[in-house]
Image 1 (cartoon, each protein chain N blue to C red):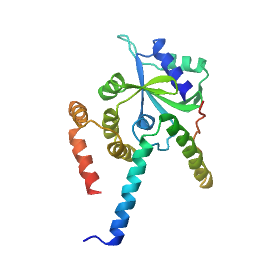
Image 2: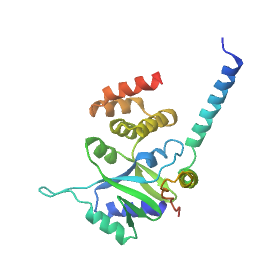
Image 3: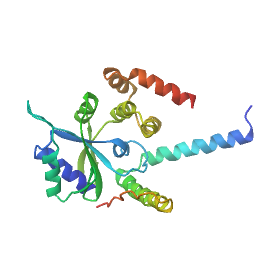
Image 4: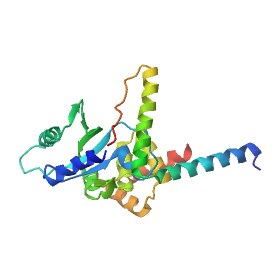
Length: 170
Length: 60
């Protein structure tokens, strides 16, 4: 895992991506108890020159040159199953840009904040996303003001109210 | 008025929550070791029920 993030760091150092951040279940590990997951979601920000289309090919090519093996939509990178996801909307872009530094062993990496993880999970809205929200609310030090700010700016307050209501009812 | 059973159950839930919060404070390296163990155990269940196995991480 340490070697995996070391290689992911090389993507930014070589300017193949603008930046990246760990999201999803793996990011929640930094704030809450471990839960079973199969892959590490690495959200990447890629600067696209005007008039060109987004492609992950140079990133994949580099990772394969560093030993990664493709497995369906994933890469096995230094023993970890990695899913590369381009930041796909304003919320995920912000989450990558505002990710915080954490270390695994001796290697630093960027991890989405607990507040952004909650907002993304709320927007995605599957049952497992709602379970992750409940876990983070119970175990992480979530900043309510920061969370409200993110949810408001990304027009998620109505969904949040619905989530809170159904959570209290259950 | 709470029954004995309710009080016992509440105490169990309080302890469980305390345990989860302690687990949340473990170092990331320890959580990764726990993850690999969970992946292995999940695969034992998957094998027994004929479901495809998940990838088990190799920690380095």
